[in-house]
Length: 121
Image 1 (cartoon, rainbow, N blue to C red):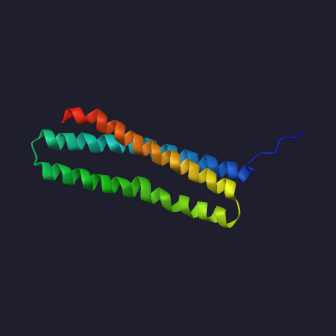
Image 2: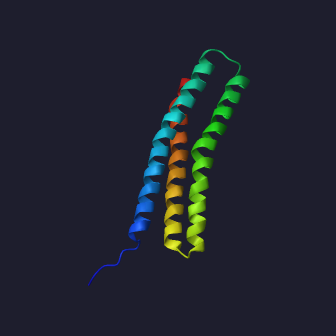
Image 3: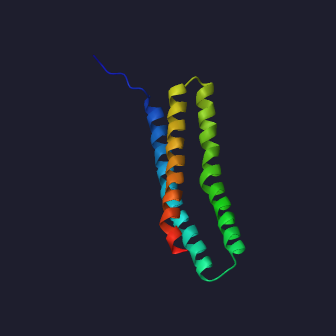
């Protein structure tokens, strides 16, 4: 008896592409998080006013969100919507799953780096 695949070759290629894309973004975001925290700690250790340190952190995080969350969300949302319209629900749910993994990884990396660096302040 021949086993039937859940996804066709094109869908497997798309899943692999998005997985690689999210993995690359995750590595880049970890480096960006570290840079942000190192800069904020450096500002605080230089004796800058807390308001300026907080403002710098907020501005850098807004830029981070724009680059690592908003920009990747555009093609992913477009692909998910197209898959739901084409009645390709398995593929749409797989992309939602990959997106959730990416977002959870971003959040937990932020928490880890915050807890790792809070003692330096």
